[in-house]
Amino acid sequence: MTMTVLLLSLLACGEPEPVVVAAPPPPAAPAVAPQVARAIELGQAVRAQPTDTTGALASKGGSRAELEGLLYEIAADPALTDAYVAAMR
Image (cartoon, rainbow, N blue to C red):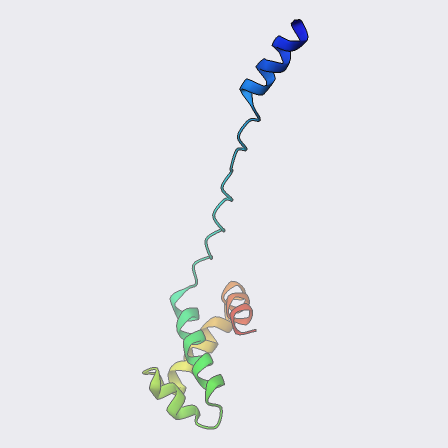
């Protein structure tokens, strides 16, 4: 009798429902300084059209002088340099 009651109570309870745990959201991308973001935009345009640098820059509303200035500014700051190099890989 005890065994029957135990067996019936186990069958009545059934298996516990699995607990679904949502994966944590991916970490937010670190914010990029505006001058780095602009240099990346211009650099990618030049990379896409290496035979027409002036046209590539103009398509993004930029110029050689702007890109050069941004690159000098970025080069003066190691953190900005690291961000730019990482993004342009």
